[in-house]
Length: 307
Image 1 (cartoon, rainbow, N blue to C red):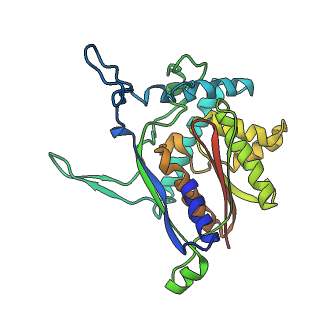
Image 2: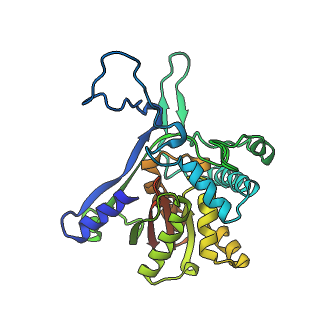
């Protein structure tokens, strides 16, 4: 998402007319770390190797799952509520995929196999159509948390997203149709152990910046880095009004999010913008809002519109 913002900023500065923005992540090829090898060196003894994916550890900080669990507990969000949101994500994604909603967004990949026919990848592999509350409830919590499990968090996925961003006059000059317009974007950072609140604060900031209300937003996605993230952030936005909370959640992650789609970190923000853009076009226009958190409590938010 920030890559899209940097592209838009460069255009506003008059430096460029077009850019491709997005990202790619390959958790399956994440390197193992050996600290101190370059300058300290080793003579005798064992060398300690670290897996940076274990607990999604950031050196000298808690695993993000632990921080997320603590914040969710403060907001009174239960394990059951997180599992229910995870199930909702799979159901919404499955319904959207069956309705053909992702056909304009997903690039089908043909993967050769050592034996047999090539595998055709035309649906996000994270999606689990057989997910149920019974199955989710049987999963053990991770890293000593109260409620964070492999079921109410996304997988460690490989993936990529790219969006072509262009000044309107350049698109018209090239005869290209503008699919959506970036209204405004924000980037924030809060206390490093408060990650689930990040999108909530970013949404508050961007609505103020755009001078529009949440009621003006037709559809919204808050990335499911954990189920607790949209649950906490929407609770922040509702300000203890349960009716308002339901209204906000009803238009949030309507086609699923990272729990069902997957979360290749550096690709997810641009994917959110793309998903929202096509959803607005199906609806005939309006405003959409996407928000995503970062590991040490950064967050970005974007508002787009379709005429």
